[in-house]
Image (tube, rainbow, N blue to C red; front, side):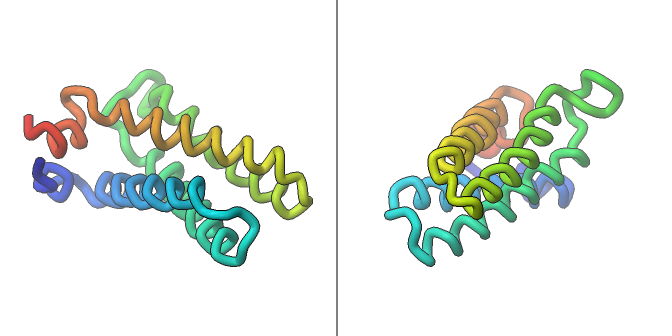
Length: 132
């Protein structure tokens, strides 16, 4: 394992990867800690901002192209942006069931699921983890 391939990438990919990794770690903590506390809210706001960073930065990453400069993964970025807004709105309105469902979906689909695809051969994170 070597971070060299990541840090040899362009700045957008570095920010995207570091944001995603930080969001993955913080999101895991959020899932495990008690809900509703000030700590939960603070970590949640940080997590939302990280997810917005990750989603927005993806629009400047064009390694895979299906339609013009974009790929199907960019649909996930749009889903993420709408999802975090919806989840935040639900929390503020007191609809905790919807908030929990939305935030967990974003965590599992947009972070864990999409993150798994970054480990495919030819991707930067594959080179970081597997050294190839």
